[in-house]
Image (cartoon, rainbow, N blue to C red; front, side):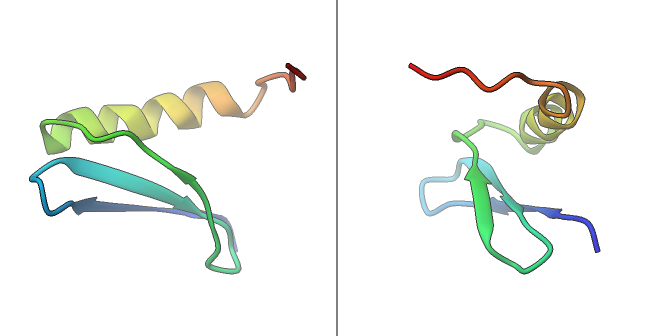
Length: 58
């Protein structure tokens, strides 16, 4: 099973998402977004950019 994105509204009214691994563990949490549409765009950005992202040590 692949990972999943969970979308929710926090207590402050901000839309957020978690990326969960197939075992249910949260592996990434988003910033707060002012709208659901913006949060969904954030999810699409992660999908589009993370697959080939390099690992950089700082």
